[in-house]
Image (cartoon, rainbow, N blue to C red; front, side, top):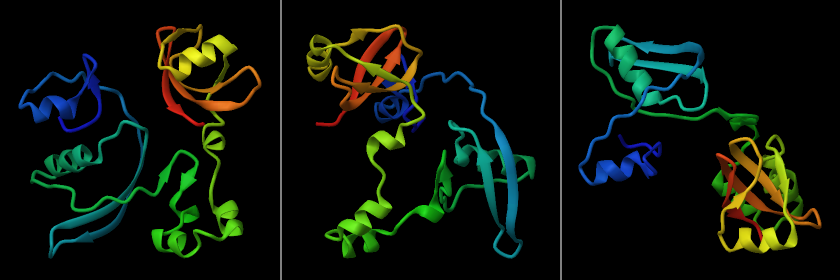
Length: 176
């Protein structure tokens, strides 16, 4: 109930804050692997690594594992090791960033352009008129597959991202 999943256009946590509970349809997720890292019987703690699809709620997985073990349980700590092609091994700590904020070579070496992050997403090129409408938040009719897409103006300049739903292109993030 405290997630950002939308039901009838409203996020679940918004319903929860209003004290309302709504029915959430089950979704298919994939658990590719679970690796047991540590079992501490003295403190009743299990540490594991999960390889899973997006949409997997690890808190719920912890509760499900506890049920299967005929006990109760909760998640004490969560560390995300990888999201898509981005791995924690290639990350930097906030302190490193603060120390190197004026070091252009460091920035160039450690940062990825926003457009590059989305390189696996489809793109959409807008006319001048559509670009103005898009930047003003007007939904555009486009024959695109549902999901996130990269948006470019007529000069092939990256201007942001959009969410496509049922042939409607809605502004998401604008890069100016």
